[in-house]
Amino acid sequence: MNRRNFIIVFLSLFVFHSLFSQSFKEIGVEKRDVKEKVVKQEDNSGKPVWPENFAFLVNGKIFYLDSKIKDNVPYFSLSSIFNPLKQAGLSYEATSGGYKITIDENEFFLDLKHFLIKSVKLYVDEKEKEKPDFTPPKPIVIPVDIFQTDGTVYFRYDFMYRGLPLLINRVIGYDKNSGTFVVGREKPVKINFELKETEPYAILTLKCPAKIKYSLIKSNDKAFLMVNARFNIDREKLLEIESNFFKILDIRFEGRKTEIDFQLTEKTDNVAAFFDRNFDELKVYFYSKDFYNPGIEALTKTATDLNATRFTIRKIIIDPGHGGEDNGAVGESGVKEKDIALKIGYKLAEELKKRGYDVVMTRYTDVYVPLKDRTGIANSNGGDLFISIHLNASYRKASGAETYILSLGGYKQVSDTVAFENRELKKNKENDTNKNLSNVSFILWDMAQREYIKDSEKFGEFVQEGLNKLMGIRDRGVKQAPLVVLKGLDMPGVLIEVGFISNPIEEAKLKTDNYQKKIVDVIANSVDRFRVFYEMRMKDLMDSENEK
Image (cartoon, rainbow, N blue to C red):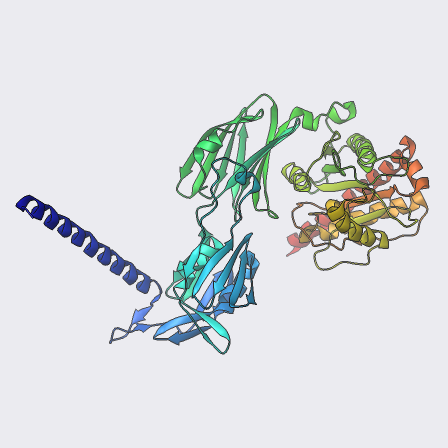
């Protein structure tokens, strides 16, 4: 080896040694930081002194962690870590060789043999898969330090802020003074987005893994969206969105906040937004004038002023069921549920306008509107009352009207017709053998927020009472659907089956303008009764508060 080569090799080894030593120093610093993160203090011999009790703060609630000291280090039981997170959407169950862990739409497996947690399924939006540059998410593998005793699994304390945040996508802090781990803000939000446009409106959906706060401001032909999370998205792709309703001018990331500036086109008359708790989606709606004014003279007129207090029922959302490729139930003569529902919806909108109410319909034409978009239209327009119009069907000789609200904790007695349809529709979804049944599982949705249940039931009672008199049938009461409750509608709401289209006699009536008008009068009168009831209830509540 000549002198020049020797010097090159020597310098290379020196540089490598320096970098390697520096790496060890950095690792040492990291270890000291981690140690100090949870150690409250040290005794005279330098051994850590741990708090007597450890706690876990989740959504403002305190849960005490079941801990054991092993090798002078605390370990926490699996159940005491995961049980508090059930309210955040986490679930777990013991399986062969470990535990299955589910959070949001992601699945993980805790492998007790190999001491690691690995991802089994990671959520990917279906539309993302269709893109040419799509790459699957990288698998997540989390080494864990655990031990088992008496059938209980214990995690080393550092799992709380090293491994757990990767599962729940949240930052976890620690308060040394109280020995409390705190589920904090979201980690950078990984967000997918999609744009859907129809003639009367466009929806920009931003899909989030956790709840976020936002504000939307409209000023002339501009709109500004501010979100308290930093979106981990391709800024350039979002800027490239082409829409007939808007153009994205700029996207700014300021600390933990994201701001999006929109330039609105002449087509856009109004902008609104709401966060869909069911699907963790922030939806921005761009409405055209055609959405509110579909060309019917009675609906284009401004509503007359109601003699009402601040707390009143002013804006009614009318939802004509089904539409487009979804016919709903079909009668013997071939009449379709979607068509009758739309005719009744129009007549009801016109009547309520005459009585001074503001009205928004979820559809004005024969188009299909997904259920979560109907909820979004209702919420983003600030509705006070939601009315969904449908027609019933049954193999049995059934007749009459039924009014439904959704249940939060079980359900009351339900008609055989609805239970029968519900069972058959599950079969129809698989085999598609019978299109004549009303899709109950498709039409009973997010109307069950706890604060609106009583108001929904009271309005439903008024409707059902009026329809019973119209049809000369006994009072069946307001029913609750035997389905899993989905939250989302931010107002009282009912679903009205105005009659059985499967009954030839009732089908003949339902096709006539005269009978449809009678149904509309019953519902409109019920809205008036409910408004009076609601205003009196609000007044009583205000008086009670003032007396305190």
